[in-house]
Image (cartoon, rainbow, N blue to C red; front, side):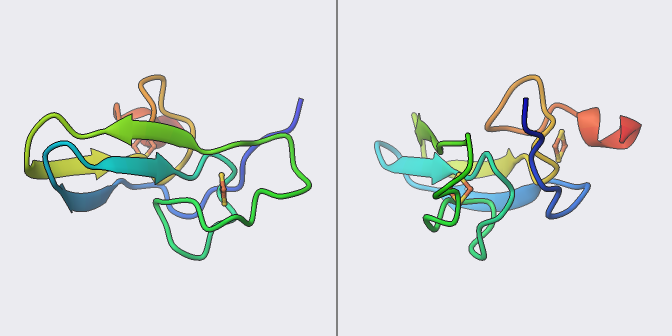
Length: 79
Ligand code: FES
Ligand code: FES
C-alpha cells in the first residue's frame, strides 16, 4: 500500500465557512496544503471531502497520518 508524503508534522489552521465543502489532500503532494490541487493524479490517493458545520477555525492534518482525518488528532507527534 502506498504511503502519503508528509508536507509538515503539524496541522494547518483554516477558517472554514459554515456549509462550505473542502477537499483535504490525502496524498501529501498538493502545493496548496492542506487541500487537494489535483497532484494526486497517478497515485492511489483521492481527496477527502469535508463539509463544515459551522464557521470556525479547524486544524486540518498536515502529516496525513491522523486517525481522524481530515482533522489533526495529535498523531503527528509520533512520526
Ligand atoms: Fe493530494 Fe489531491 S493533491 S489528494
Ligand atoms: Fe497529522 Fe496532527 S498533523 S495528526
